[in-house]
Length: 273
Image (cartoon, rainbow, N blue to C red; front, side, top):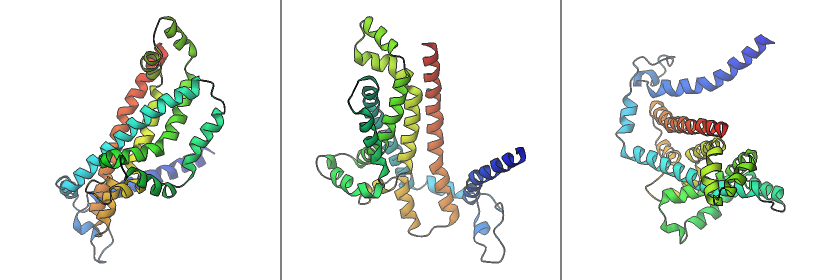
């Protein structure tokens, strides 16, 4: 049984690591390693590894602009989701609302429908006044908030339910207002769950394509998935595409590590209090 377990772990790691290896390999490949002309098979590792494609990408203003647009859209989506989702989750967790289970079910059932079925009405709403007066990054951030908000509320509700009510009662006895209690006491204790919701929201926003395409296809500001579609239209070489894909992964990894630090701080604060 132990051998079978190690074999299964090895197979899973292979399917996780191998695509990353191929993406890294092609991103640093020289032309001779990928354009063989049928004279010889592609090498397992490039003949002459080079960072030329990364230099080309860094020099392209359109790529840098798309990266900044995706970053701003993701941050807007995280901010909107937490600002709307955390108070909503707190209300659902603390107040006796008739039919709260049914309400939560219908809130989550929104995500059961495919995105393509909702993109037309959402795009029509956001591209009409007064929303059309907002910058495109804010519009896409609002659209991604609609996608992430049900999960944010669901995750945060469970977090607030796990926090003892005694903390709020003691704060009220000492004269703290509800708003101060929520932001100064409950929010630091809820950081682990809110951090998990923030990571999920940023992942969803960073990878989302359909809403970003419908809201930005006519303008010059596009997210990285839409930018990648435009690049694919002229059939670039594999090393160029792989370099873009590898760079797209970097901000997600950095954001995850940054949020994990705050998650650990929230856990420590909760243990101390």
